Length: 404
Ligand code: PLP
Picture 1: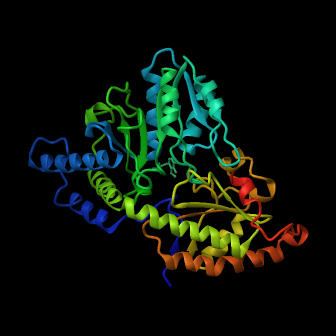
Picture 2: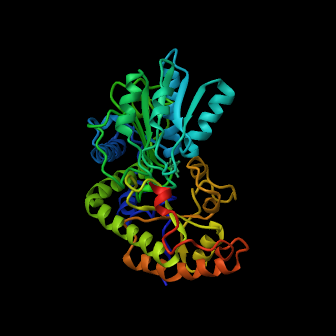
Picture 3: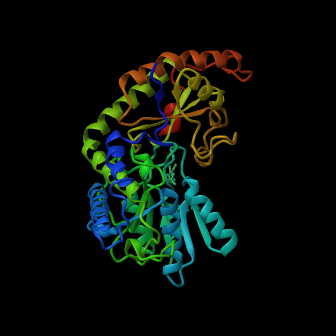
């Protein structure tokens, strides 16, 4: 039986069209994009085309606003460090408690080793940002406010345009980690006043190890990687041409499929959630019900651990994940769910299902066939199971209370 892959927020399968577009750039068109001979110029043309495809997907005003990097982590690091280096007298960062470790571990380092003041803004039970606290934290010393467009664990979307406006009122730059948003929802940077945006190829059916940082024209910028004059002196190092071409193709395909796939994926995700709530019960959907990525579902099963659920799904040929891919392997509840104050009886029972344009109706049906049985068996054997906590009603447990 074909395995079911529902861990697309961790990574996606490269589209075969992406792979086909990349292949000639390993062999026939192997030139260095900076060379002045024919080998170089044909490759430079392909890099230019990839930049234009990303510009189109993001609705950016100029193709030179796109800087190719090695991925989301590098883009995030480059954005934050640049904002600190490029603005004299501004040495504070405003960000959130639910960012990806690509931001959080960097700002912790900057706080501990470089004396940078870091304001970590909290969220409510549905994962929504505390806007008042965000507003209060911004000030004349803020170098940059960095808020993710979409959370990787719950799919919660943040109001980045509004947040960017507030950051600008304080004279600060605004960055968004849009690694989980690009390719899944429409983005139009012409209508959002965002200075810097990070994205990553492998989250949108492109290759791993390639990404981009959007740097709005006129934004002060200091490169992270100093070296040759590539990327208009904003990122040194010979361009990874096959990967850049792959990312460009992935952006083109994402743009082409977005309108149709968004609705299809959302309805598969909603069906998965509704059926699980009905057939399994005693579970809560985590995240903002009104502002969420269409592909992400984070479901917490009361009084159970997520780990054995994910393991048994894996044995049944279904790949889902425990919270964030980066936190898996540790038994600690995720920092995102802790920041949301998810109640103790649900905190360790969260399982993330993340869909993509590769996901079929049959995939969702397979999960719905096996999951109720897995949960029922675990509830029978769990010492903390519902036998000791009889349900008050047949309604899905607090799913509304948690998600409102
Ligand atoms: N930011 C977010 C929100 C992510 O989900 C990830 C990857 O999981 C990253 C950044 C890191 O991206 P990359 O794997 O390309 O370094």
